[in-house]
Amino acid sequence: MATQLVMYEEEFHRINAVCDRLTKDANAKVVFLVDKNGQLISAAGQTHNIDTTSLASLTAGNVAAMGGLAKLIGENEFPNQFHEGAKDSLYMTLVGGRVVLVVIFDNRTSLGLVRLRIKKASDELEKIFIALAARSSAPGAGSPFAEISDADIDNLFSE
Amino acid sequence: MSFINYSSREINCKIVYYGPGLCGKTTNLQYIYNKTNPETKGKLISLSTETDRTLFFDFLPLSLGEIRGFKTRFHLYTVPGQVFYDASRKLILKGVDGVVFVADSQVERMEANIESMDNLRVNLAEQGYDLNKVPFVIQYNKRDLPNAVSEEELRNVLNPRGVPDFPGVAPTGVGVFDTLKAVAKLVLTELKKGGQ
Image 1 (cartoon, rainbow over the protein chains, first blue to last red):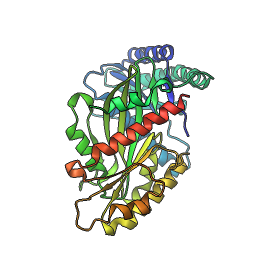
Image 2: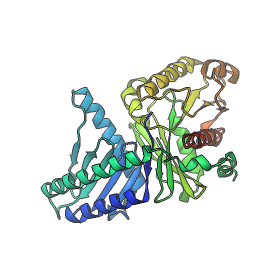
Image 3: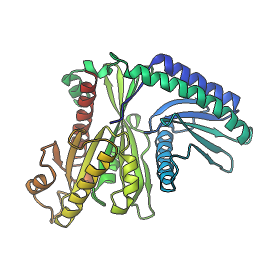
Image 4: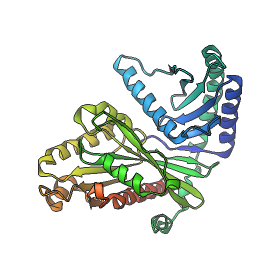
């Protein structure tokens, strides 16, 4: 069974900083980082008009479907995807086979610049996720839920 | 596969509604969506065909409240039930924390129920999960129809292991929240075990 994704304060801030910087460097509108299972990890830029939870879930669905298509034609994955819209476009990159970096941009920047900046950011993110995986699999890194009681769980459903 | 974020103090879990075509998976989600407070739910997303059959999945994010300072969020997904969408069903099971099997109580759907249950077991195994170990509940839906098989018979065929099961009439909400609560509880109990 896949291990669960655990995010710690320090790595969370480092990831947010990378996403913030990518938004500025690529002159993008929004940058998202999404777990392959559809959980939103980080969002930077003009996120106020976007339903981030839905975006995360649909990104994961899209990446999973394209991964399935890739396997059908003998590829392992399609690590990069570009979707061009009339105003806004969307670029998705798989990072470390585990998370998806999504950049939304318009004509104030160019696909070339976005790709260039994504490359650098995804290298940095990959390192952070390797560190994160090592940290959460280290002995003693238990779930915070080890402490909860059956009563805690019952209380959640009491109303 | 749950996602625990210590920084934002959130925990996210994924629950998948499985079952044969037209058994009422989407109806379960629609009922939950209609009956929950706007502040506790996100948008209900349905990727369906023009005839309202699920094409890829439905998705509903739901907040359940806090446990020990952690916000608990559940992401509810349905799979497309039609047999030929198997490739899509496999994808949706990735990273699942709990499964609800929605059975169609009508006698003529018995075979479809059994086929779908077998398909669930096989597809979970492909993702490295064992149906006997994953948090799992069953809903016998469409109890209001005249051609419904008895609950006992459904239980004999579909639930030999005796997991929590509930009679349901999804359009009117009978059993819908009981089913959801039961699976959510099992998922949280599993998380508790995982931390020990």
